[in-house]
Length: 113
Image (cartoon, rainbow, N blue to C red; front, side):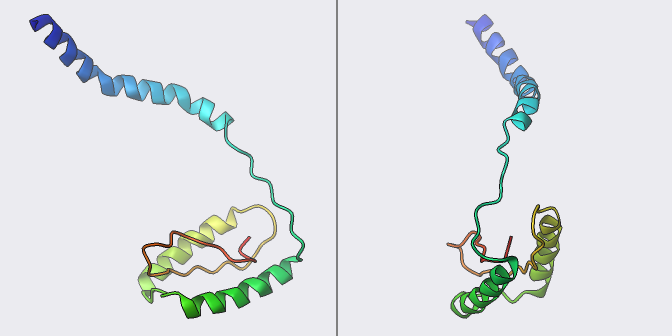
């Protein structure tokens, strides 16, 4: 019985190393399996998308509790603009707002790329 416990303890001590080795060996394969995102079909011109998005944003802000925290909004805007700069395709004027509601994760309106 003592041999079993010693073997089990040695195995549990090696488990993190095994897990890291497995993770590192799978990393190159995950990069190859990544889905290539292609732009969808759009009936509207980019300027029409922007106009519709701006109108929708006005309506959304009337109905949603927008967080009015300048530091949080500034951080979100910096992060969002950095991500938007990497987006392929048409260059849209992105705006970011924080909705103070736990049931909303994120959403986008037309003209947001």
